[in-house]
Image 1 (cartoon, rainbow, N blue to C red):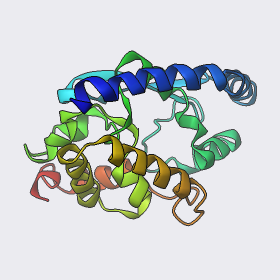
Image 2: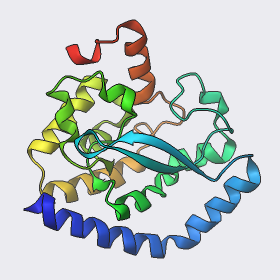
Image 3: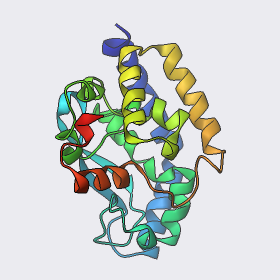
Image 4: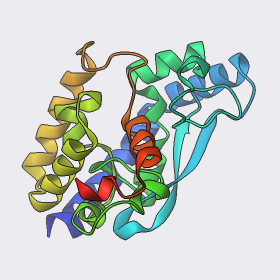
Length: 209
């Protein structure tokens, strides 16, 4: 009931409201990104969403043109503006459009690129039984300090216990985490870096966790 009707209604209403009130910020960041580096202001990438379906996720571009956002060796290619956007999570602002379209939710497992979905077992793929989120349990309670398997466990736990109360708690903890400099350390390796390492070692490694 909550997932099918209430959650989607709240997502749509919330995304509509936030897109309106943040429109000046949205426009300002778009202009700044365009003026300070070559390339489009919005970075688009195919990600795995609800039930494994693919969708195009949007973020403000934080890296120099032609550099993949999940490239493990590209930390030094992040632009000066990009570092600020990442530190404040403002690079995620365009994902409000994804929420409005129904591709994503405010709360849910973070969307990964299709390659990593292919290396999950059936239990791990349950994280895609709900819409991916701008933030989720793993981001609220560990961010970059968790291993891949810990993040997946948090994601599956969210799927099994999804509720309005739980979503509100995740939002509260996420906001608190944004002001925790240790949890939000600039330049720290993310989930895609660790996944790339595992994949290079053994294509089935992820499924063994």
